[in-house]
Amino acid sequence: MLSSEFPAYLATRKAEVESALDQTITVTYPEVIYEAMRYSLLIGGKRLRPILCLAACELLGGERATAMATACALEMVHTMSLIHDDLPAMDNDDLRRGKPTNHRVYGEAIAILAGDALLAYAFEWVATQTQGVSPAVVLRVIGELGHAFAATGVIGGQVVDLASEGRPDTNLETLHFIHTHKTGALLEACVTCGALLGGGQDSDLEHLRTYAQSIGLAFQIVDDILDVTASSEQLGKTAGKDLVAQKVTYPSLWGLEASRQKAYDLVTVAKDSLSGYGDAAHPLHYLADYIVERDR
Amino acid sequence: MLSSEFPAYLATRKAEVESALDQTITVTYPEVIYEAMRYSLLIGGKRLRPILCLAACELLGGERATAMATACALEMVHTMSLIHDDLPAMDNDDLRRGKPTNHRVYGEAIAILAGDALLAYAFEWVATQTQGVSPAVVLRVIGELGHAFAATGVIGGQVVDLASEGRPDTNLETLHFIHTHKTGALLEACVTCGALLGGGQDSDLEHLRTYAQSIGLAFQIVDDILDVTASSEQLGKTAGKDLVAQKVTYPSLWGLEASRQKAYDLVTVAKDSLSGYGDAAHPLHYLADYIVERDR
Image 1 (cartoon, each protein chain N blue to C red):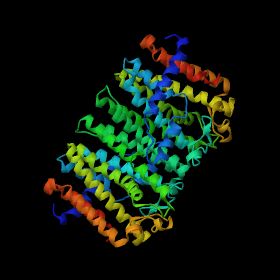
Image 2: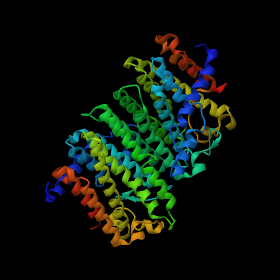
Image 3: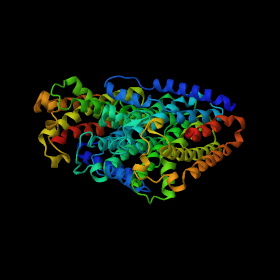
Image 4: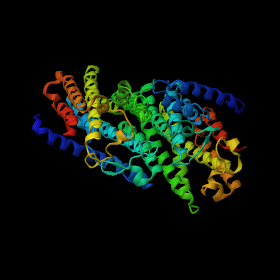
């Protein structure tokens, strides 16, 4: 794939994912919960996680159709974490992707339950909808997904993140823990699950873990930079939150320029980890570039 | 099994389940989330759901060890639903099983996250810890568990329950929907998952579904009766809540005596559904009796 072909690749994958997501949830009685789930799941976003999952599957010679149920489940899990993060008891956010957050539309109780329902449904969806691989592989995928999200993953990161608010003495080690868990763990699951569904071996998983950890950290550094440099309108969420919450961030520890450089260095590490796959890794290379180029 | 042997059976199973639950979660950094998960998971309770799961597995000739991971997962899922139900945005309860609710001890943010973590971990636990059956069976169990908890199950019931508060015009059909989903769906999953892990066929699952639906409804009727007749001390949670919340309940629709009779009738239906299994069904018979005899 030429880099000039990447925008079309991205648009096609995004459309495929959104079409698949649209078919995951049917509104039935009691309508409000299904509508609340659909509201946040279908509100938009880059669909980076499902696209990474599909790309990792294809890298190893798998069919996208095999990974699509898991790709959708990853977006459900990610969406549920955003719904709960935005709650008044957590980050108390009114805007997400330029739209009112779930609890601003449906109230706190339904927002909590919509998140819970998306999480349970994600696992059900993988277990019941995955076709084309052995059940043993699907179980491994479910194990990876659970581990990436539970206290060992996203939630552990969120806990440390909440605890470090208003603590300007947070050190780099803690900041690193937050991001490798809150953001990194699920990105890692995207590529490892995709790789498993594509027939990957343990060595493939290792390469892809390095890739994901690197782009995960780069992603978070760029996120921190954007919080400083972009407007709320550009972000589709409240800007300057980290400063207000007295959060330690990469720019606050390293400065903006060194943070940008570090993000680019990490993308190089990510690309190098896939050097053994030749041209087949191009989509994952461009996806890594795409992640850091959000701040341009 | 003689009915005189049932108390010892129950005590033994409860101890086995609590020992297994104790081994599911190890406290590590960040400690507070693992402690919050353990607090609610190990605070006590009858362990009815895991015991039902193990009993269904044994009814069909399976080994208890095969069903233990799923039995623990069912208790994790049940516990997470209690943590979230107790939140200020939901039922706003201070007491559960005679102890402060999770958010009263750890704060709202951690309580939300502890519930989320338990839910994801439940699926991971089943996927990674189940041994002695084919992966295809484990996938069916995960599908049943997800379906029983998501918007199609417990959460759908909770949504209608919240919507019917302060609405004395709630009809029997709606009340029935609430309870077959909020309570019934997970009880059904307990026995169907146990049956699947015990090598059950579809016809076994059907019998056990009837059993679970009947005891689920009986359980809820007894719960409603207890809310009227028992003290907070006896319940280990706030009594008289339904009255305060102006909730329609079975006693409010049928009266206390007719409600009691209905609960006993449902237990008869439950027992009859297992008539084909002979003496092997005795534990499940006594468990059905045990559920309605809570109000004595």
